[in-house]
Length: 283
Image 1 (tube, one colour):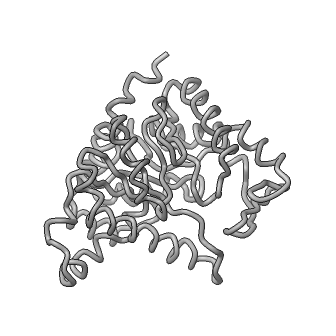
Image 2 (cartoon, rainbow, N blue to C red):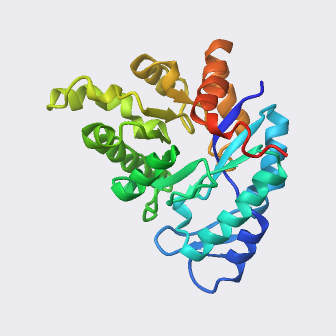
């Protein structure tokens, strides 16, 4: 299927070298990523490389991926600048198969920006993205490591996302009515919390804002089924979080719902969200 993976991360070669040259966090030392807040852990730099990202698209039959620099890597401004330059070159070199998002800034050459969940309510950035007709991809930011290791991504990251979604339906959607916002990780389980929000005073119509979408990475059939029942297929967009999780695993989860849903999540919704990108990177 000529679909799109809306959630992948890539380290272009120049960015990886910049990480390796650094003498303090964030830095890369012999395959170990060292972060100021997130601690240190082993990574496979090659898995983040452009060649690996394109090879996984080819293996899974996908046409393109939206790629970004994750806030969880705690990039400094100089690293983000290197990533921007390299990512734009990658987009041109791949004829648009890798579609980059800027890091926490609105830049005209990009489709939008990845925005750390904790700073999502930065109205100056959201206003600039809206003015440029770009989208915001809300993603977890740094969190201190907690044992056992699943608690950081499973609890800290998800709670950041849920808090960002709550701010959006309480205030952001009204203030930025034409800004397209995609929440990673199904908004931290947003569908599960809506009934409680409403019982505690939220307007029952607020969660169903027309300018919010939910990316599916790391969740299985139960979470997808509830999200589909709550928001509808047109509000979900496929993502894998590769190379953290294999693209094939995420595709297999969506495939269990049938080809109509696959078409919606992998083709129709990404095309609508990225309509301005259709000819941007054409050779």
